[in-house]
Each structure stands twice: as C-alpha cells, then as structure tokens.
Image 1 (cartoon, rainbow, N blue to C red):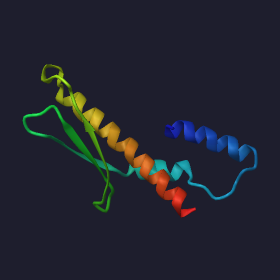
Image 2 (cartoon, rainbow, N blue to C red; image 1 turned 30 degrees about the vertical axis):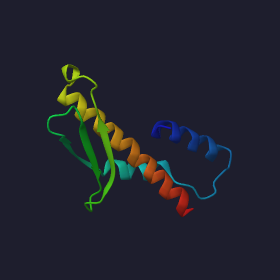
Image 3 (spheres, one colour; image 1 turned 30 degrees about the horizontal axis):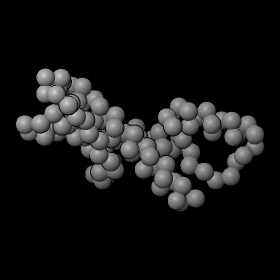
Length: 102
C-alpha cells in the first residue's frame, strides 16, 4: 500500500474513533524523507543497485533494477527504478518494525 493510501486509511480510522496505538503514516513518511540513496551499476551487466541509507549510516534496504537486453538498458532509468525499489522496501521495513513494536 502506498503512503498516500495509508494516510487515507488512517484518516478513516481516526474518524471512526479507532485510536489504539499504531504506526503513524507521518512517522514513516518522515523516516523515508530522511533517507539518502547510493547507487552502483554492476560492471558489465544491466543491473543497478541502490542502497537506502539512514542519517546514521545504517542501510535500511537495497533496491535493484535489471534490463533483460543490454540494448534496452538506460542508466538513468536503472537508477530511478533501483531507488524506487529501495524506497518501497524501506517503507515495508519501517511498517514491519512499527507493527512489531506495538
């Protein structure tokens, strides 16, 4: 579920008076916004890897992208897809950590 969809669900629950402890979407968004990304293309491949890095240097998630054919490989697209995948995995990790903590 996207963070935008999660915000909507959270608002619906709040409106229904469902206020038991839960992971707040704003908290996850803040954590995601604090991430930086480092990318690398694996030499002689169409694989790009992105690391989602917290401000303290902890790598919270890795994302990747691949092109089946080298003739279709575009470095900028590879970086974008790898970062998007790393961000999605970071969101899932934050949601899971919050669920376990509650």
